[in-house]
Image 1 (cartoon, rainbow, N blue to C red):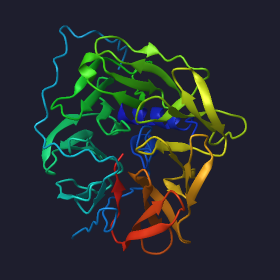
Image 2 (cartoon, rainbow, N blue to C red):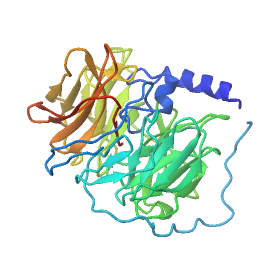
Image 3 (tube, one colour):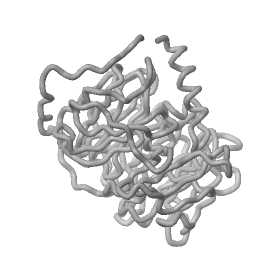
Image 4 (cartoon, helix red, strand yellow):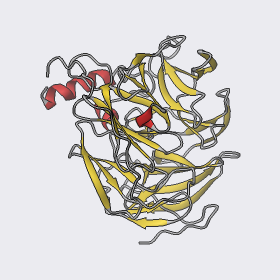
Length: 387
């Protein structure tokens, strides 16, 4: 399949995603990720991070039929990761001008080129996983910020688990690949996302551990509906049985609840959303006023936003009933371009000017009252917040 055909196909699929209206750039990239995240987003580059004051003081310096075939031999257990193990601190990291600010306040100079970067993830062992814009590579950097290795892809999109222990992508043979915290080598599933012909599917959610031995669950689909589940490396995906057609937008850290979207006449543009119990196969809450993107690190809250062209006029924090807890609206003349959970009580939010010379600001928003604390205002270069 030519790149032109591939582009047209993803554009066609992206136009029918129920949730935020997505372009092909949205499928390739992402801005929270929303969209982080597991649907791709993005068209304008949201950039990277850093700040001062947080709970721990921070300061930043300076073709054809592809019938899947089982592997001829069992998949070996991935070896332990040589990367430096770091304390697990739930929350998003921020990249700004090549420096990574971790949730615990530590700063790491990296070799990452943030030009046009729209998405990256940080595993709990400290490794940084980057879909490199324009070169069809997934690059993995060690906890010290230097390049460890890279993998070929055709679609530069990753999906992270809510607890940051797993990151997944789709390889050029349409197979799902999962890199696990503490494991040096990724696990490649023998069977890919079930899609007809030469088409790429989506990884909508993942959770669990010890993927090589069947301990992980991957929810996959066609960018419009989550249709299948992958659990066993050697076994084909099985059809996902749900109470109604839906697309998984986020999975709670413990995997017991899914934030989902589904088509609805009430809102043809965005559709409606819900909190879904996969065990009981029932919707616990519904709303046609919200589009959830991610759970908080403790799984108690969700962040919701509706916008276009990777710009949002506001973001909302919702409870488990999808009722409003608080909201944040950026100053006049600016728009929200990225966000992530710093911890269960705070969001990190990137805003960008929409008038005059481009500038970016990083603010910290409390979920209790929506109060915004500027961390790095009016920067000439952007911020990128991790998945």
